[in-house]
Image 1 (cartoon, rainbow, N blue to C red):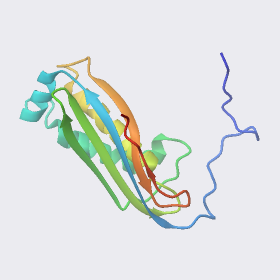
Image 2 (cartoon, one colour):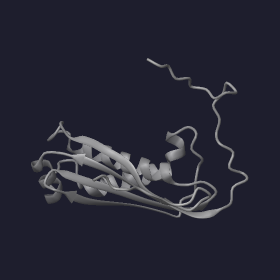
Image 3 (tube, rainbow, N blue to C red):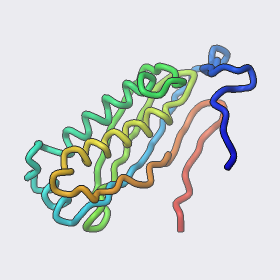
Length: 160
């Protein structure tokens, strides 16, 4: 098995220097799925989870996570966000889709903030529903799109 080094060629970890980059409007959208029993999704929908309103709590948790990404991921730059929103929708009878949209005007993008937002929102759903369904699966966390910046726009092609 190949071993990985934790340091760069200079022998130290470093935050990328973005001081030369141009401020642009940047936006990122990420998604995560939470698969669960049909009964669990029904209880979320009907508001019968003992810990409270699952989607409201997960929405707040996701927004808080986006705002605190640089505290969680060491090499992320702290970014003042212009907006962060979390949306939920059902996919079939046993899956909850979570999408986060994050915006800023800055020299670096908000992909990590969007990915962190959906990850924490999904974990919040798990936490609030685990007494009913320990077999829930958080899966397919991915970046759907990003706009702005020198590298241009990215839009995920959906799998066939």
